[in-house]
Image (cartoon, rainbow, N blue to C red; front, side, top):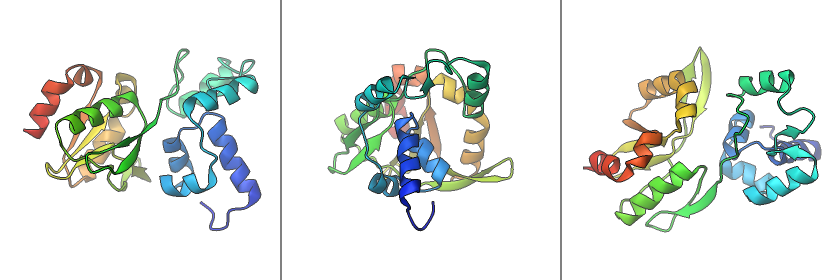
Length: 200
């Protein structure tokens, strides 16, 4: 992230956001924090971003109708984590823990976990990101939840993400000083049972 935010840079940042980049993707691309991005972004809800994308003749906030599904698009998308014809954007929401601290949750899985924790009066936070190495490259990991009282990290991943991020999560687990528990699709279906097991 440049130390001086030029008009051109902020316009590029906004353009990336409006074209469908998630906040997490922008954080990784520009190597910065959520708070820093929010200072410069005209943040929109998912529905507003989708309306803007539609006006610009774009599908899913991703690309033009003419470009969507072409060989070039599929190749480019696979470099970014995968191409799926019916893929949708995550629906992020602001959510408060039992102390009233507000955090941005990026997926429906995260919302379900946060709701369960609040219902059971368990304090959760979003921990500070930490660095890990994958294929010799230094990367930043953003955990979904930490439960301070139980000293565990909870990460939610749908089956697709889990299938393409196994090496990443292995590297993260090796460097983390706090145990990491990953909840996948099946775990979310049986959330009450799984969470009671994790928190004892």
